[in-house]
Length: 220
Figure 1 (cartoon, rainbow, N blue to C red):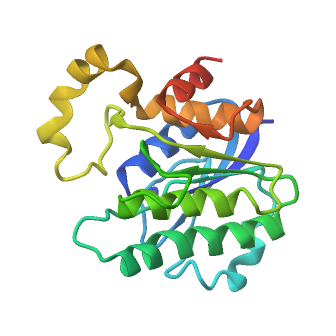
Figure 2 (cartoon, rainbow, N blue to C red):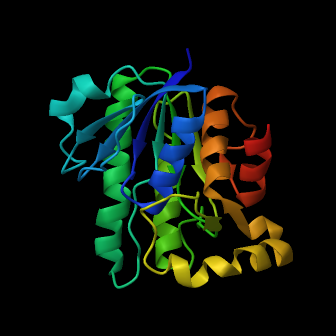
């Protein structure tokens, strides 16, 4: 029958890529998109719920029940933000959302997208890396069946994606060069999505997955 998954961030580049991979994968039977604005996606596997505020999910509890995994791909850039504002936009929504779905779905696998160079010590000099590191650490303390933190580097979009970063067309041509010179610094969004599906269905010996791990798991 396949598993049922929640995907956040489908109106962004990573979330859209993961969603498209889930649509095409027979291991996935149903997808619930939790978004702040309509995604425009129309597919038999996909249901959508519009949630303007991830801090107030109680009224959506019935819609969030009955899922095997959550692929949390929502996020914002740290550019132009203070540490306090980035913390409020990154840490609090992820933890608030995770606490609710953990309570509603016994045995759920939760996958969180952080980024390459995330700082698990929470003490480094890079602001976004510290906050992402704290988010990872606190997610792994929640009562999920398992938590996997994905740290992709450069990601190649899936053909046909519409939700690309504004700057993506300007650096997409670098992907084959970076892949050739530093193969563990770049992967495709299809690999990210497939690895998430395999993490939920097969597991993986590590909870923090760097680019090399993502590629290995995608092929497993």
